[in-house]
Image (cartoon, rainbow, N blue to C red):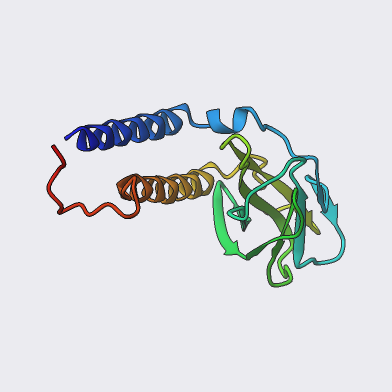
Length: 180
């Protein structure tokens, strides 16, 4: 019976932490609010199209780093382009995508878990190829970023929940009668 109570307590704790992180919004990123640099540099204007962006997070990141490219259509509308994230070093990751064809403003959004303390480095870098997007928006694309953050939190919560359900003793038979 105490094992069941312990599991219920763990489930409540995981739920409370997840809810707190969701309500706090950017609180997990507060301890890690800036990156060391990016190539190309954030807010740079490029004359030639590119097909890769690399970010140095300045501290060790996990393999679960996620990056994705969006294009600013103007008037607070964004098109998801995506890309493939590759961790290139202990503190760096690269986003590979088809070479940009349209002139305008692009955002590379990132979520990089830090395994040392469990925090997540979250944010975006931007670059402009040619002229800025029509009706240019200098605002950060909040809606796609929040959607990505919710997905990452949901996946993390699911794996935490599944791990919590695993038996504490690997050889224990859950159907065996309790010892007196």
